[in-house]
Each structure stands twice: as C-alpha cells, then as structure tokens.
Amino acid sequence: MRFPLVTAVLCLSLAPLRATDTNQATTPVADALDWYSVWFGSNPDGTPGPQTCRGEFRGPSYSFRCDPLSVVVGVTANEEGRCSIAFMRPSVGPGDGLRVQTLEQLVAPGVPRRKGAAPQYCGELPVKEGTFQIVVAPHPRSVNGVLTNAARSAALAYNKAAGDRPCLLRFPNVKTGDPFVHVYQECQGVLDVIWHFPISDGQVADSADFYYSPKRGLPPGVEGRRNRADLWFAVSRPEERNRAGR
Image (cartoon, rainbow, N blue to C red; front, side, top):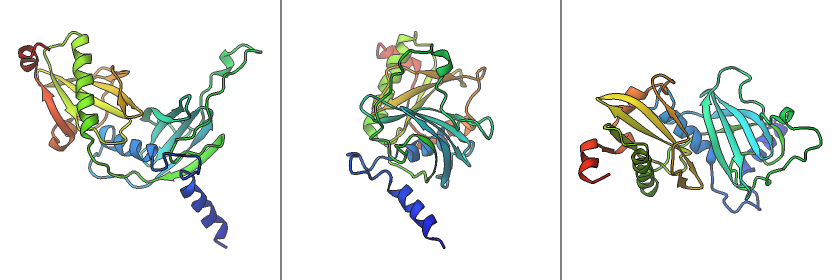
C-alpha cells in the first residue's frame, strides 16, 4: 500500500507550482543551500545531496533546519508576500531552528499583533501555517555577471565609507539565487574580516549586515576558498584604489 506515500510526495513536489504564484520557477531554499555549501561548508567541492528540512511557518516567518548540512535557515515574507532568506547559520543541536521565535512574551496583553502578508512567492516552502518537512535538492547555478559587478561596487563603496584600510579586497563570483555575498578583506596576507552582504529581490545591499573575523569566528574552509580561482571575480589592491582616487 504505497499510494498514500506517493500522493504525499507528489503534493510536496507540486507545492511551488500554485496557480496564484506568478514566479513558479523560483527555488530560494535550493539556491541558498547550494550557496551555503560553498561559502560556509567545510567541503565546498561539488553540490550536496538532497536535504531534509524540518521547521515551522508562523506568518510571516519561517524557521527550519536542513540536514545533513546541519544548517538553520530563517526566511521572512515582505509586504508583497515575497520570501527572502534572512539568515543561515550552523545548527547547535537537534532541536535548533525547528520553531519560529516570535518573542510574543515581550508584547503586553491587549496590544494588537500585526500580521504580515500571506506568502505567495516562496518557492519550495509551504504557505499553510504550522510545522512542516520538505526534501530539497540543492542544484548548481550559473554566475550572474550583473550581480557580481553589483556586489563589487557595493563592497568598494562600503569599504570607502569605512575608511579604506590598506588591505586587499577579494570579490566573489555571485550566482543567480545567491542569498548573500561574502567579501574577504586580507591585510598583509592574512584574512582579517569577511563582510556579509544580503541579497534581496536580486539587489545587493549597500552595506554589510554582519562580519566574520578570526576573533568572532570564521566559516570553516576559508583558506581553501582563498586558493580557489573559480570562486573569485576580482581583487582590489590598496595602491590601485589610491591611484583611482577611491
């Protein structure tokens, strides 16, 4: 009697193809997991296998953990119902990331709760509130030249506003669907900081919303990534920026 199981799998696979979803081809979770496996994984070679993602949707937020990558993912829907990846981080335990943290206990009784827009453009994610489990297969994607150049421009402007230390900046190749950009700053040949720029609706943020450093902790595998030419678009040396007046 395999019919109920087959029916359930088919329903999950067809969930992103809702008639009301005009962006049916989006795969934000698969794209994000592929990005994470390269830029935060300990082994960035190749595309990881299918991931089992378990968590909760409580509008307008999702929280879930995907294994075997052991990554916790947060997703939010904006006022148009379009989802974007809010954060990705390593899981710290088997129950980590399975529930949305609403902080309702901090809201006084009687204060009306503002409910966000119903998600409509969220790819693989369910639109019915409650707990869920989905299987997502990350897939390789192509480098996006427009996003790659936009990330470089954003990082250069951010670096200039921060005082432009005499360090080398390393700009990555950015792929279509990447949720974030990591820009490496290397001072005297040593990795000093990694700037974390969000990408939302295909737009790279003007400033980094977080940074990694040796003191704070660096993503695993950073030295291997620094030596992989295929991951990088360009570098910016301080003497070149000085000559260009940047």
